[in-house]
Image 1 (cartoon, rainbow, N blue to C red):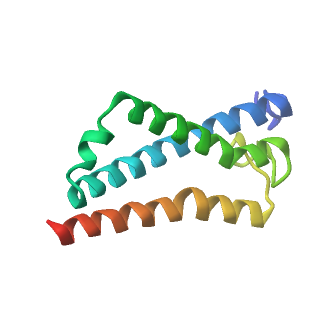
Image 2 (cartoon, rainbow, N blue to C red):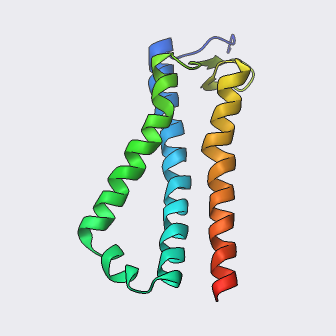
Length: 127
C-alpha cells in the first residue's frame, strides 16, 4: 500500500525534474527554431542556403539544448526555486514558491508561444 512518501531521494528528484523540464523546453525551443527558420526563409530566400548547412543545424541544436538546460540550472542548484516531491501529483516538481513558478511559466511557455505565433503571423502576412 502506498503511504504518500516519495520513492526517490531529493537528489534523484532534482535530477529527474531537471531532465524532464529540460526536455520539455527542448521541444518548444525546437518548434520556435523551426518557426524562426521558416520566417527567415520567407523574408530572405538566401537564408535557406546558409541555414541548411550541417554546421548551422548542429549549432542550432547545441544552442537549443544549452539554452533549455540553462533555464532549469538555477532551479537545479536551488538558487531560484527548487525541485521536490509533490504528494498531490505524485511527481517531482517545482516547490510552491510563487515567483519561480511564475517566471518559469512566462519564460518557458508564454514567451515562446507568443514568439511562435508572431512569426507565423509574419509569414501569413508575407505570403
